[in-house]
Length: 151
Length: 151
DNA sequence: ACTTTACCTCAACCTATCTTTAGGTTTTAG
DNA sequence: CTAAAACCTAAAGATAGGTTGAGGTAAAGT
Image 1 (tube, rainbow over the protein chains, first blue to last red):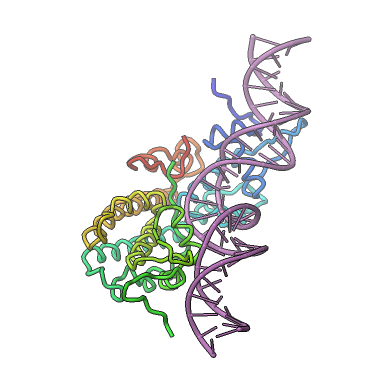
Image 2: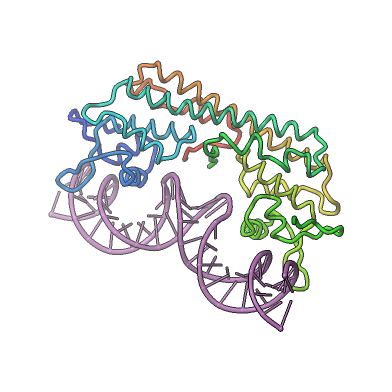
């Protein structure tokens, strides 16, 4: 039978890991980075509040959007510390990252257009080919490469 | 005064670096990775054919499209070695990488739609929130590439 | 000729995001 | 009570894509 969180809702690291589909070592790592928090029980083992699950889900979602952990931390740090974040709190983060995502999409679309143009262009003249001289559209206004990882 | 390639077209590494806007060390690095080739002069210095400039431009363009150096190498290796690649050769590569780029764009758009949906959703129920349970839209339909997910 | 710039190799280092390993402790199941 | 499973820490290793530095050689400007 699936282990369930206690009613007092202090979750063990293994449970959180399984539920979030990340390794325990990743949770340790996130903790050292200040992305999640825990307290310790009598035996020095980590315990989490249930909202850590949402935090982790949000971290993973933001990563998929191409946001770095450092940026994610900065944004998570704007959540209220005095109370459990509510729907509006989370929505604010989504909105912020969505804007970044939109920028990335736009960047990739410009890139696509350029490459498409290049297929048909003369492309063997160094002075005119946009692949040789890519410093107009592509160099600027792009906030970080979008690194989508494969397994 | 700007140094110009000789008519016999053997380019020095510094010239190539400046022209391509990459570091000399990057050219060394690319060479160790088999992405570009050179020969040596009497004094053991690297010399390049002019088409190395296009190769580097193409490498940089592909990187912007999110292609890894390893994949780039595999694709560059399909260029004819017996002759200088022509327009059609390069166009073939563009087409291939463009398809990958299209996939990434589509992925990001699905992601965007999902996050947008999440802003308005109840989002505090672990069993129904798509942020908590992201294994439907995002994992699938991604030909061989499970993005940012472990198995 | 002499000096500066360019080039060479090899190894170590860098950032980000984790994972692995080793050695030891705590909790839980039977 | 015992044994297995889960947990702890600290450090090292992995991966991509390079950059930096040391120590020495080659080429080019004057």
